[in-house]
Length: 531
Image 1 (cartoon, one colour):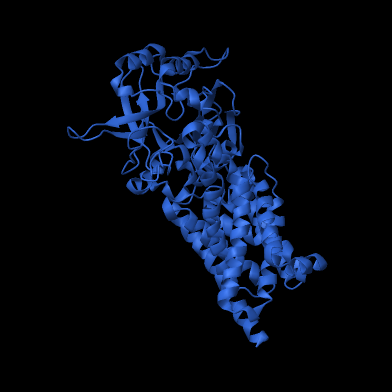
Image 2 (image 1 turned 180 degrees about the vertical axis):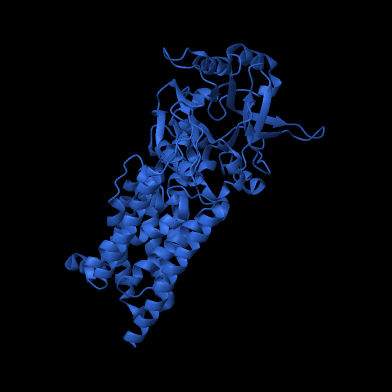
């Protein structure tokens, strides 16, 4: 290991950045659908040795060294995000004649932008770099800070945060309920970097001891929390939820001539008889934008829903909502979810709060439209965002907390009022991305929101993956990707004790402070020894 570490430290120029790019790309194998947990150990071990090589040239001066470690982190991040997000380009091929020109921006431009955060992480770590175990703390501090910033800068896009690589099974997910996604990310980077200590031997014993303690705490708390889960609902579920997964090709959904047939396909899956001996569903859930027209302007459609629903049943469906303002002003469109009862009456609605840039609205619209940049969703002016998140009240008094599409990837946007809900509702349409890693990554991130909030999660996706998930992150039942069907799943109205988002953020910053103090203390000692 010392010989390998030495050879990597001595790399220079293009070979150094090529290896950093490859190390980042290898790390993406830890993400769904691959789930190779060990890949990130390889990635961060290589990154530490590459940074050791840069730190061994103090004669370069601070500015040159910081620029070099920034570019090193950027190369690492570009490899990681390119390998993990290449599938975004698939959305542009749905209407290739209009959007294929933007393919390089999605496939290369977004990873290049996101890699700036990893460049920031290594630059911060470079300021604190020393030797031994403390340099791993510096790297963990830098990546924790960068991933936190990535969750809200430029509207935020915390997709595929490093911490997800350390939370692949329910027993590995429970720590997020205490320290949140970014707390797990900070500690995960520290642990993933530990094999680098075998390259220099300095701090090896202490590092292995810290790693064992942290891994035991991670898995031990997971086992404890899963073992203490109480099921106050008993053996029988209180509600039966029908997940409708129509698997409609996105190009077909964009055709105006096929809307009536699409609507009837949803109704057919909704009205199908349950399996022999099973109860009929109480709640039927359709995916995001499943209603192919403006529902409030189509009374025949509401009457048709009333014909299909049996007494006491309720439909929860994604649809576009329109709002008209003063005469002469353009209407405002919202990506919404409706609650419709068995009489065809709309009993509640909630609008999407966090819109998808370039998918549902164009940032800096006037300026970018001059360059020919348009929405993927063909609505005049795009969608409007709701000012606040509304809870969905069902006729029986139960409440759902709606997260539409990629809103489920933002842990800090779930407010304290989530505790008033029976379950989280996540509706989405991942058909834009085809059979790629995207839908599997999205599904994993939605599961973590159930664990963090301690509530069950109901998820309906056009092409998959649809599922009901327990507060522990366990999948009760699901429909696999591209499986056109419905699934009746029992929803047990149980919850698990969970810290608030404010508490998780406090715990995250405590972890960051500890890593920072370790790195600073060692850095000062390192400078003193060198002098």
